[in-house]
Image (cartoon, rainbow, N blue to C red; front, side):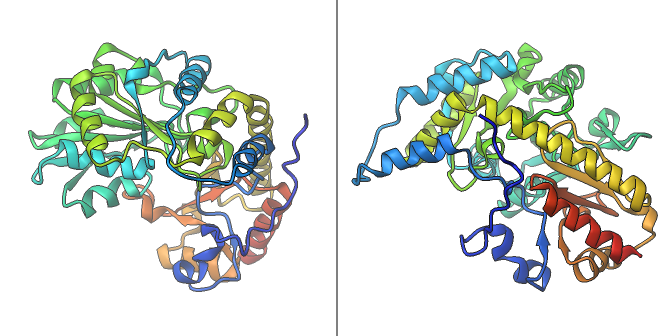
Length: 389
């Protein structure tokens, strides 16, 4: 089957976040939204059909979690990431950011600290801070080609005995980096030696692009396996973020017992009725849709690169190795933060994520979602080009 990613879906009136908070967050609602990290492609029909089939049985009471859910997740991870996950390592969690908050409260005392690697997904900072924990910054090093590397020397200089947890973005958001095995192995060794748990957010793991490969953190060494809590979900890949379908993988039995006992005590490990249905449909029927979607996203990224090169060479897009988010380096425009926001919002009428929200190193950048029909992307870039002129 050939899927149509050029189809424009009018999301207004559906309660979608992308349009629903424009006035609140950007001061106006006449913007073309390319910010929040879900795609504008229609959710795959095999997921919708599976949900509709269940809806025809019009009684939505308490349900049990089907064994097929775990079998399907295990098979998907093994086929796509060469990682044999055992059933007892797995549990449902009600969202990855929520999972981060839960891990912080289970494993960290109030005076203990969380390490993050900015520029990075902003809840990595906001969630620990809102839970009363201090955040320690281990900024990524910018490389000459515009990409990033981990700064292990700086990490060693800022870590103390109160640092108990590091949140890893793998693949990295917003830069789209698929961290290589050697980098992850080095990080694992450092954290193992310093008794630091690594929470690895791998929600974009199934969206590697341009021949790149995702490496699960827990697979790079025995040390990594023993300190890792991995979070995953089909939500980004199959555009079902509104159906909370996240899961955790914890190989270490001591960490697992402590974390999963707490989740179970608070009934936070029980999915809603529709989460297993959507996940099973996605992972058992979704491979061809995923491949076609990734090819379309790659074409969109190439289009963005060509357009900026020809029309707006001052703005340099970093080609992502994974996901549908493009990190735009706007520093050559010579604008301060307020001027850059004014250019995108008030002049170009676009809603993107500004780089400052991702922490140190994000100044002068914007994050753009290209998981949208090409016609929408073309309109957005044309608006920005005219605003710059």
